Image (tube, rainbow, N blue to C red; front, side, top):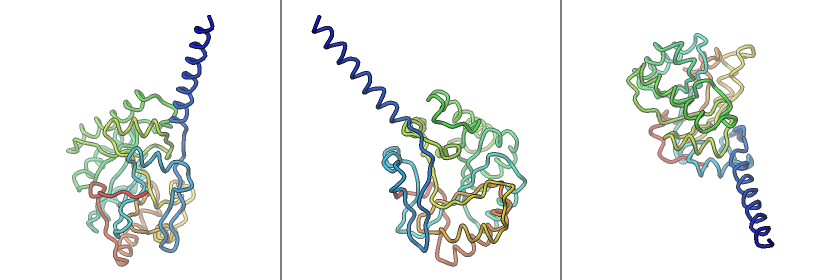
Length: 258
């Protein structure tokens, strides 16, 4: 009887340990970072998730020994500015990646096709833009698969290597599950509040916000729904190049830094 009781207690403790470990793996984080100022590098040292990003091979920034920049756009829906953004990128010969939702792919297949045709990458931003930490791994896979299949059916891009979690919410589990599906999760090291279409402050403001944060290896997040970003983009590109920066595709990022 005592032996049975001991075994039961041991099993309970093991079970509790399992659930604690599982809960820890699914603790949600909202991506954030200490911004670059005066040329200093940004940091995630105090955010509590640096080891999780490293373990799962997620990207925060590129090679900080090189003056390279990676331009990324989040496209949840079309607000009339993406054609002009693509015009600027084509004129300036700058590669970018566009993270698309299912809504965007369904609504603007001609723009998705143009992105790929003009040499840009298309990344996965999920089908319905959910909080990934609140859905199962099976649901997460479905979210990613539907975007990939839709883009593949629309464009010449047959592979999809990069994902950006909706709203920047993630956990150890969701990063691991995305990686298991063949994706590299991409966060960012330059950003500002540009997504509120009712709080646009002008192209000069957007320009200053981005330029003040530039640093070697920067992964720049811009939202394509922003009028300010669209109007500031050409100037940002020109003046970054004047500072010696080179714009590269994420496929050229060989040495992520944490």
